[in-house]
Image (cartoon, rainbow, N blue to C red; front, top):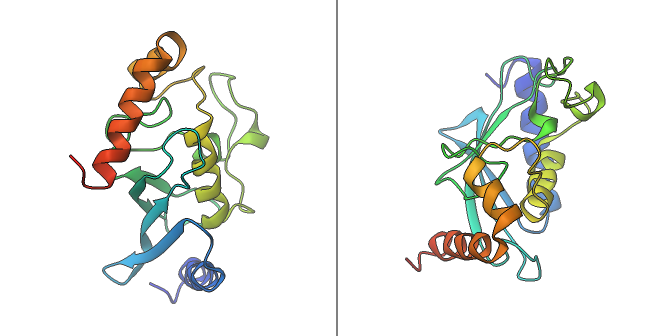
Length: 167
């Protein structure tokens, strides 16, 4: 599959990320499939939320990449307003490049072919620290974020401990 234009692009992007050694991000292929990446996000201790965690995720790229966005899923899921209980990430840049039928997002906030796996992962790391609770994927996490920050932080610390194998 690396013989397709999308496959060649993804192969180059993976090689570039591995060469750059972007701090806190490690990527590799799943079963030698350039369209399936396993990702490890190692969140810096100085990050307010999720700091110190090691979170595994998968990026699944469509054959239409870079014209269509990949899907990202944390395995196991994280407790976060913008992550569905299934682990799938809900962030504007991963939404298809079309008008939002609900009028919530502008087209400029959605997927664009200028995005790369690196910009996606950096955006997700930023999202972990700054949840958007206006359009939540996890309603309970958004409710706690707004109404009970102490309990929300308790749930986040549990996710961090689990990511380190401490539970």
